[in-house]
Length: 402
Ligand code: NAP
Ligand code: MG
Image 1 (cartoon, rainbow, N blue to C red):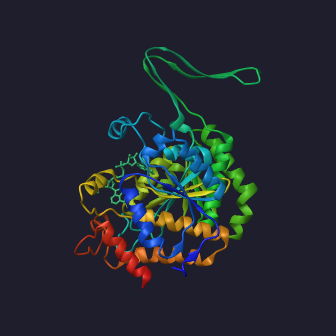
Image 2: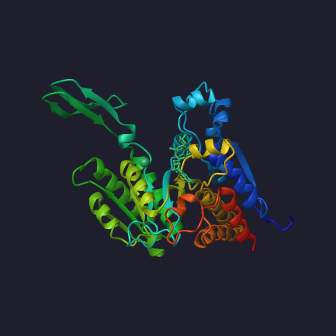
Image 3: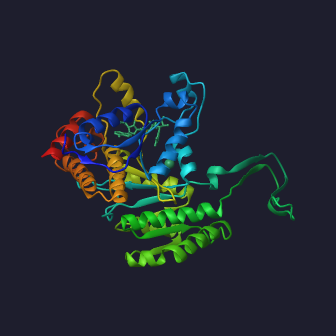
């Protein structure tokens, strides 16, 4: 193995749970280690190690991503009551992805991986649409109240410096009902805009951003204003030099244009819009197993992962001895994304070339009819039989080594 491609600096490697943990080890053994002198700082985010470390391993892994500039993450269980019983946990820790996002203050970009035998539901789409979702605030950090009967609901701002408070009437309730208070932060919105333009420049994509500022003049109006300010002051020249446009419109107009477009742009979305649109795009583009996810921090640090979860049901079948047909493509692309970024930062073209060959070998297998069951159900023409994960990774390995 003396001729393996060498790495200059390590990647933060975050291992995870269940079926994706099984595939993680398999992808490393069969597709990475024979070809590269893989350098990683390994963090085990498997549920039992998060429990054993009081979840410290999660924050440590996020710090490592920040320090090293690049991370790759396996899917992890978000613990809940059922998982507590299943694994005999003492604690319920927050979602690891939430913890990592909070530390890196990042924006998540989701991009479908496309193959010619799986046609998107929208016939005009020729290139993938990438969703950049602002992952802070709005409905996701809302305070809500059930209002039992008639009365006045107000919003009160009490400045920390003791200066005069501000109050507005939210509603004069005539009867019982509901209220919700949401917020966002200027700096978070600006960092969201920065992450979007940084990602778009890296991927050479034009940027769309949309809100409902005609209705929400102050709240969405602020989003529009700050996003535009970041573009004008920090990115207009860079985008122009790269031949990339920035386009702002209303959210309903953006949705209507999106389904008539040929794709090939980054759609920056507020938190709720991004939640809905990323699932819509994933499902219209093909399969959840073909969606990659990248967290881009305004500092420039990036974390790559598959968008799907730990594929729990397949794991239970694997534990009973079945060789499941779980699709490892998004997981392979998480690795190739991280290796490509590492190569760019370290200026090591052979590493970037290897990542590209691995992506080509992976998609080449599918294009030639070797694929897992989830894709077989969507493919036209459909192959005669589906491969299990081990056979599929073998088919990729054969092409990689040809
Ligand atoms: P999931 O793991 O994404 O799986 C849901 C279903 O989607 C699977 O049962 C399977 O359908 C299909 N699927 C997903 N990935 C696939 C793949 N690679 N190949 C083939 N089919 C695939 O979601 P979940 O079952 O709701 O969540 C399981 C665990 O993952 C939960 O504990 C959750 O907390 C965690 N999770 C983690 C992340 C993350 O770390 N980023 C994200 C989401 C969820 P069929 O059974 O029909 O084949
Ligand atoms: Mg969602």
